[in-house]
Figure 1 (cartoon, rainbow, N blue to C red):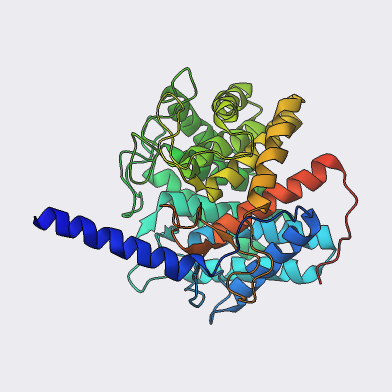
Figure 2: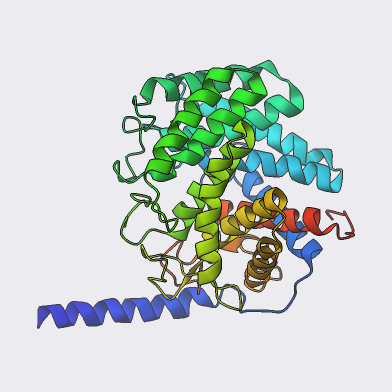
Amino acid sequence: MKAQVKKFVRFAESTRDKIRYTRHYTKVHSNFDLDSHIREAGHWLGRAQDAGNDRGVSYGARFGGAFLESYPETTGYIIPTFIRLADFYDDPSYLQRAIQAGEWEISVQMPTGAVMAGRTSASPQPAVFNTGQVLLGWAALVKRTGQVQFREAGVRAAEWMLSQQERDGNWIRGNSPFANPTSTLYNVKAAWGMAEFGRAAAIPKYIEAASHHADYTLAHQRPNGWFENCCLTDPARPLLHTIAYTMQGLVGLGRITGRSDLISAAATTADALFRLMGPDGFVPGRITSDFGGAVSWCCLTGSAQTSIVWAALDQLTGNSKYMEAHQRVNRYLMARHDISSPDSTIRGGLAGSWPVSGEYGQYMVLNWATKFLLDALLDEVTLTNTTHSKTAS
């Protein structure tokens, strides 16, 4: 009887939340104008950075709520997106945002050189993954500005990552306390950050260590593209988000090192996801080991990341199927990207899941979902050579 009561209460609470929160976010629409989506997403990231008392980018916002505190991990990899927007619009204010975000990351860097897990905290704990993500930002700033402060911060961070690396290339020590320490194969994206910084700072040992970690990743990929131990919470049914992190890391490292085996490994997974994708661009938010859908909701974040991978594979292989997949999922994302809400915490931001009651980032807009959407749409502009207005206003 008690179990039935609890089940009814959970159902009632879920129904209440759907009624309460879903009304805040747009329904599916048919505005597929790339300029509008890029502009509004860029504006949202700017508001998310301006919302707090520092120059980090807000984690995001729950529907109907205010912007949350800054998030070091994702602010780090938003930096390259700000730089892309500066070039896309020929707008130096976005470059200034990138520099300010990089300086903020230095101000919250831990004494060991690591980047903290989670949101900003008075009692920070180090995280390998987060450190690698911020290295992507510092690498971009080293390349763009040449400023010594970013190089010095990046060296401290990369040296800490080296100190935590196991002989087999894996990271067990230094993983985030919010992660399952035995299910972090997606750390290959952190390795990509270390390699990216190694290239920017001309320090080959960081690239070599990252390539060694890539070997560990490949050893845990099955022939069908499945990655073992690759999820924050459920390794048997991993999030598309963490699968996509792994593909992104392999592609990034493949480009830096010239290793075609890394590109091929990412392509094997990307091909399996292409076969899974529906005609409308839907990809399930959790995936089973035979590349079946484990849930009925979409992880919009992971879909945007997968779009980025398909765009990269189109460039690297010239296979037209990747462009078709990239554009199909982009249309799915744009149809669910709210660019008209009067609420400034929502307009231009991307929800974590679709429907918005889905498990990932439930009833929230997230800064990293928005960042990955921007990158995917900017990739489409680049690959199709479409003429765009290039105005951020």
